[in-house]
Image (cartoon, one colour):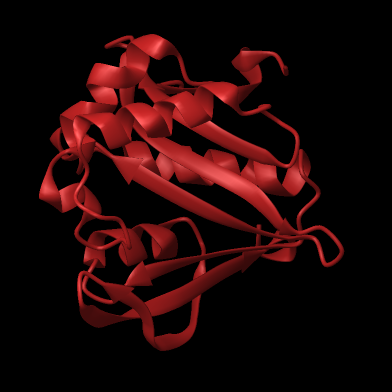
Length: 180
C-alpha cells in the first residue's frame, strides 16, 4: 500500500485513505438519507446495505487499478465522504470517477479538493489518459463539481438509467490528462 501522506489534498484539509471498520457509523450518517441515493441507481439504503458496502471496501486491494478512498476531514479525524477513481479500459487508458459527501459538510470545497486529488492519482498513479463521470441532469451539485475540477460536458445520455420505475437522463463529463 502506498504511503498515505501522499494522498493528502493540496490544502491539507483532507486525507484520502483506505476504509476502516470504524467508518461505518459515519457512512451510515449520510448514506441512509434520501439525498444520497436519490440521483443514483441504488435502492434506498439500509443499515445492512451500507455495512455490506463497507465490507466490500475493506476487502479491496487498494491501488491495483482502483482507488476507492475514505475522505477524512483531518481536523475532525473521521470520514465525511468517499471518492473513487478506477481503470475501466486498460487498453485505451480510460477510467471513471465517483464521489459522495455527507451533506453536513457541503459548500466548503471538500469534495472539489478530493475529486481533484483522485483525478491526479488517476493520471499519475494509474496512467490514465481520459477519466469520465456521469451525473443525473437534476443533480446540479454533482455536475457543477465536475466543471469546477476541469471536466467538460460531452453530452446528454437520454434515458440511460431506470431508477425506481422512471427513466432518467444523465450528463456525461470527461477530463483528459492533457487538460491538466
